[in-house]
Image (cartoon, rainbow, N blue to C red; front, side):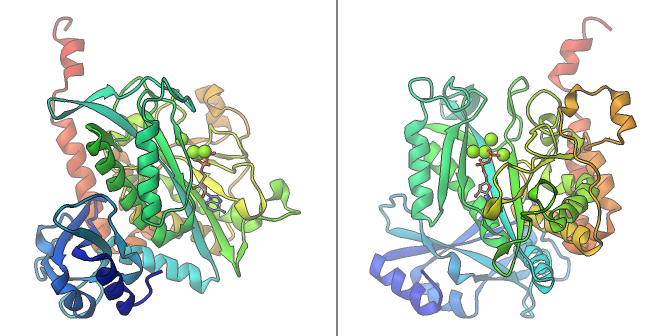
Length: 441
Ligand code: ADP
Ligand code: MG
Ligand code: MG
Ligand code: MG
Ligand code: MG
């Protein structure tokens, strides 16, 4: 385990590492990096490496553009794929301003700020995301939406053609210190899921970023295209990123209560209440694309209504059956196109508000909500998730808690990006409209 500067230098020397990729994530959740030869490592570990922040989406500041990357030593890992020019390692970085202060729009900083608040209340958040993705064929080097196989949920060879690729992704992730729990074919043709063990929010957000580029890289080595697009095929399940959450206090799971109703604690209920209260605004972060909302429709195992339940999978939040150490809530709306740092920060802030204000999540809806009529839903006070990114943006704009959690800079930029995304979409005339209207209207 790497804990200090000397460990890094030693690991570089013993493994004959030649290059270091300094990585960070922009507001939209895209991983960026700058590569340095090992000759620069001393400088990187002491003063940091400067870069021009004004070219990074959402980082633009008129007054400041010289940012500094300072690697988080604990994220040092050697990238396991071959490189004939010498081994390459990566470190995930924090972003600083030239005056030495932390950059308020660095997604890692935003998350660390909320984690600190939790810590002050005596809690630590555990997060376990389930990333789903598609493997598609490439034709003439170009990605298509032709599924790589015609397997379904939990199927195996010969219908699941991706066993070897999944194993290679799993092995690569294990080389990068992931604790893998399971991998399986998902419901849609060409769709897969690989589950890794939950951890603290920051480590897990870092892991989500690593997971995505490892998956894409291994797929590419096999001549395939991996995508985390939420809904690539209209008539198939989309790809979600369920987020499993629990708080621990003094090393114990604070969501478990042996004697509580459903064996969950008041803290768990309050946390859920906070998340339910803010979920419409959280959607703008957890479901940031036009395409995200095409997944959140009835009929495809994705949530639509703002409810919580026991093990029933039609709810937005459910309590998976395991108890004791594994007691957790599962938030089912986020998708893997989100920025995981900001998404976990928003969820944690909302949950903590629920705990702080001892909020009540209301009654569980332990039946299939999709079977209710509109009127029955209205009678039960069941609300609906936003149905477009534009609607989510309106909720985020007016959410004071999330505004202070994200900081003004990130809040403004997320809104700007969400509205630009919506405008880009609504100003197009789509093929669907031509097919539907051209000959009949
Ligand atoms: P599902 O039944 O919804 O498919 P999975 O088994 O695919 O669930 O994923 C469960 C996730 O929950 C894993 O990432 C696991 O590590 C995580 N998890 C387990 N216990 C906890 C906990 N106490 N807090 C947060 N996450 C947890
Ligand atoms: Mg799963
Ligand atoms: Mg599972
Ligand atoms: Mg799944
Ligand atoms: Mg799940």
